[in-house]
Length: 513
Image 1 (tube, one colour):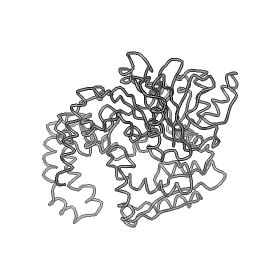
Image 2: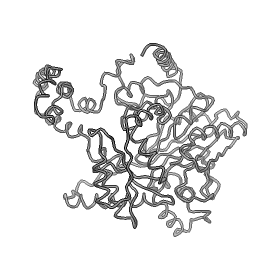
Image 3: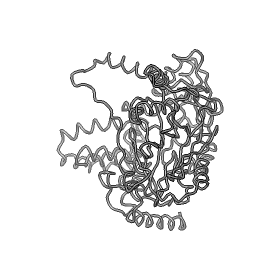
Image 4: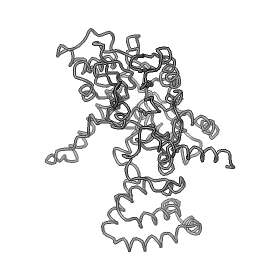
C-alpha cells in the first residue's frame, strides 16, 4: 500500500515553504504506508499541496515517483493502490495512437495518460483495481478525489475552517495545524452499536469517508469551494443481471470460478514478492488454491496458531497448505503476544475499532512482512457470499415474520426471556456441549428480542448490532434513519455538539474506570 495526503487553503495565504512543510508533515505521519519513497507537490497560487508515501510494488524505478504529472501537464496525482488492467489500458492507448512517450511502466503513469485521453471519469470507468487518489485538474481548476468501486482503499476528507484536508488515514489530517479533533456524536453512537464507525461517518466532526465508486470535486477557486465538498458523485454502479437470463447452478459455478480465477490472476502481477494469508477456511483456501494453480512455484502462505484449542485454526491451514503444496510459515501466538499488541492499537487504527480480529491480523501481517511485500487474503468472502450466521438466521426469522402474527411472536418472546438466565445455563450444561452453545442464555435473550420486532428492517438492524441501546448512552436521542443529514463541513452546530461530547469524554477520562 501507499499513503496519500494533502490540503487546500481556501484563502491562499500560505507561502510555498509553508505549504511544503505542512504537506511533508502530513506524509510523514503515514510513512508506515510507504517506506520506500516520499514526495510533495505544491501550487501556492491555488493554495494546494499534495503528499505521497510510496510502497514500491509496480515499477520499482525512480520513474514511479509521486506526485506524478500527466504527459500533457494538466493533471497531477497522488495515487494509493493498484490498477490491475493497466497493461490492457496501455495497449489500448497505443492502439488508438494516444499513448505518450512512456517514462516507465507504472500503473499510475498509465492512469494519467488515460486521463489525458478520456478524461478523469473515462479513465476511472475503464480502471479495474483498488485505489484511492487525489488529482489536481489544472485545466478545469479543481481537485478530484476518487475511490475504487468496492472501497478497498481508504480516503478521508473534510473542511476544517477554510482548509480542505484529505488523506489515507486520519493521522495525516491530525497533524495539520488547523485540524480540530472533535468527536462526532453520531459516529460515537454508531461505534457503540456496531463495534466500528460505519461510512460515510468518521469519529471526527466534519470529516467523512469518501464512499466507494465515487468522485468528489472541489473547485480550486470561487464561491462553491466549501459547498461542493458535500456532494460525492458515483462514477460506477453495480450492474443488475438481465431479468431474462437466469443461470443454471452449473453455469453459475462455472462463471464464478472464472471470475475468481481472473481476479486472483490479475492481483498476482507484481514486481515484489507476494504471498497469501491462509486460515484454512473456505475463503482464504480458495484464494490460495487459485494462486497456486496459476503459479510456476510454491506460493508462500502464512497463518498463525494459538495454544488455546478453541481459537486455533492452524491445523486446518496446515492441512490446506500440504494439499496445495505451498511454502507454508506459521506463527504460534501466546496470550502475552496478543496483550503486547493492545497498547499499539490506537496507533494502528485511527478510529475506535472493536473487532477482536484486529490483534491476530496485525500479528499475521507482521510475520508475513518479513518475507513478502504483498499478500492476498479471503477478506470480504463472508459479505459477498452470505457466510455469516446472521444471514442464515435472518432468512429463517424473516419466514417466521411473514407467517406468525406479531402478537404471537411477542408471546413467544416472553417465554424465551424467562428461559434466558443463569438457571437455564446450568440446566443446558447438563446436556451435550453443542446444545449448550446453541441454546445459551445469551442466545435465548437475543432470540426473545428479535421475535418482538415489528418488521424486517428492525430485524436486520438488531442482527448486525452488538449493542442496540447504544444511542441511549450518548444522550443524543435516536439515530437518524439516514446519514444524508450528517454534514461534511464543520459548521457552528456541529462544533457545538462535538464540544459537548469532547468535554464529557475528557471528564470520563479523569474519573474512575
